[in-house]
Amino acid sequence: MDKSSWAEEISLLKSLAEQTELEHSIKWGIDVYTYKGKNVMGIAPFKNYVGIWFYNGVFMKDPKGVFINAQEGKTKSLRQWRFNSMEEIDEASVSAYIKEAIENEKAGIKLVPAKPGQFEMPEFLEKALESDALLKTAFDKLTPGKQKEYAEHIGGAKREQTQIERLAKVRPMILEGKGLNDKYKK
Image 1 (tube, rainbow, N blue to C red):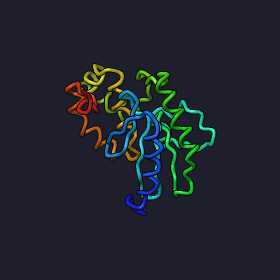
Image 2 (image 1 turned 45 degrees about the horizontal axis):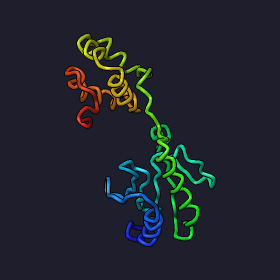
Image 3 (image 1 turned 180 degrees about the horizontal axis):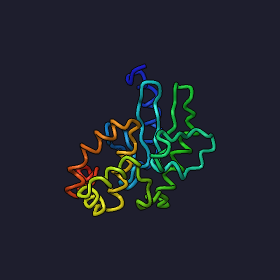
Image 4 (image 1 turned 120 degrees about the horizontal axis):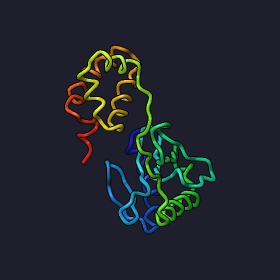
C-alpha cells in the first residue's frame, strides 16, 4: 500500500486534531500539530500503516495500550499509535488521547534530557587511544558529551573493520576538538 492509499485515514485523523485548539503546520514533511509553538502530535503515512506521534507520549496514560516506542533505547518521550485500516480508528479514543496530550502540554509536562554521563568505552577505541598519544590528548580535551558521541559511534559498529573505518573518518574531527554532531548544532 502506498502513501496515497492512506488519504481517508489521514483526513479523519487531521479532522480530529483540527477540532481542538492545536495549530497545524508542516514539519519534517509531515503534518504536525502544536500548542503555543510546542509540538504536541504529528500524523504521517507509511507503507503499511498511518501513525500518530505524541511528542510527550511517555507521560500519557495509554489506557488502550496502543503506544509503541519506535526506537527502543533511543526515543525517550515520543510515542506512536499505528493504524492499519480505517476501521481501527476509534474517533472517541483518538480524541481523548489528543485532549490528554494538550492538557499535558498546558501543564508543562515534558522530559528533561539527562546530561551525558558515564559511558562504556569500546575496547577498540580504548586501544586506539593507548597507541596514539596525540589522539588520546585531543580526545581527553573533548567534553564528556562529545566523548560519548564518538564512543557510541565507533562502538556501535559490529565489525572491527567498520570500527577501523569509522575511527579513521572521525580522527581529524577529534584532533580539531570537534564533536561528531557539531555540524548539526546551532
